[in-house]
Length: 467
Image (cartoon, rainbow, N blue to C red; front, side, top):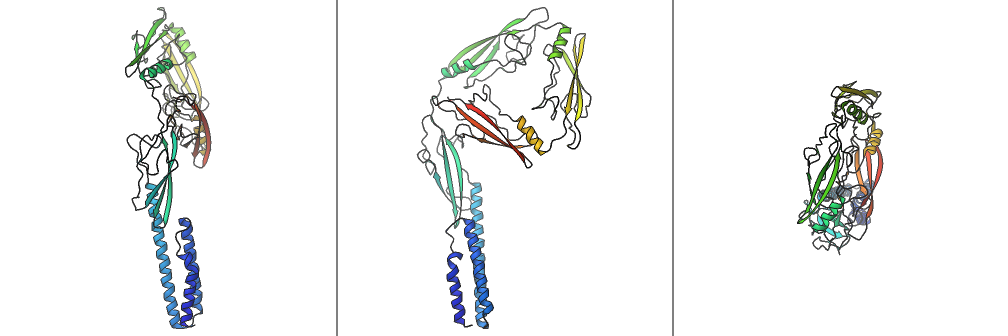
């Protein structure tokens, strides 16, 4: 084959394939690299076919040299493309928005700093989904009156021919009228209540209070004072009942509610019941005695240590506990050794010895300690136990503060949360209450519970109260 014929063939092949081999500016990075690799392989194949048909040694040497140069150029381009992609990927992974002062993604009240270059040299351009609220460069912020606004900030990273995108969602807080100190105190006074222990109420106090709130739902400081601290302490943690025969006692508790210069008082009168005679005390404490199980456990399903074995009855009897199988469940209930997953459940008897003076009695609890769970059972147990942690005064029907959303179940499941309205209640539990007059908002929180390939979901609906 003539030398000029070989050269013409080579030039023809390059003209045929060059537009695809060396075009890097269209499509995604992966598509472009795949097209380039395919074109390189196709062209190399065609050149080798020409080489097989070429008999002239000088022409073969020239063609062989051209093929080697072509393959080297393809390899160089491929290596450079791979390095460019890695740099862009690394810069994308490291990219973050810088917030000012106490701001964060769920609470933007000031301009944000948007990086324009990655650590590996990628150029970064930003686009705001709502530039009238937060500009493309992040430096101009216009908060809306009485309304939070979700804004997506999208970054496009580029290094030579490699590109990537990354989107951040931020909540630009609205401007809301603030409660005055007097309004805050008045609201907290109206909502303030004593949390009684057990089945107690204001007319029958037999044990310490569950809680005396130190802070109102709207932020007021609450200070408690007992008018009879020898009967009920000012923190409500100690209750000394009158001896049997001395009669019940009324105790006045005063709550001082303060915010700034505003002050209010709220007075509670409770009745502390006198103690019972020893036999009645033992009988009453036996009747009221219960084991405090952990999580969603019960007497027929013990999977974790007991939360509490009372050492004293609500009427004053002393209580001692004995386990029939301390190697499985200790007598204090704090240590539990469950059977292996391939073994049977174990029955354990917990005996309570109740004593007051010369009177005594026993109460036996029959418990079933469950074998270790497999993955689906762990998911089911963590789903059953799952709950939202509310701040003092809040509940599912009235959310005014951030909520706690567990990310790990007791039995090891991973929990991921999704909010149906992230601008009001975020995936992490941050609360952005609607402005006064906009009305309360119901939000559905969905938890995805997973463990070693098994998964399930559980949803909760809560009401976020307007300001």
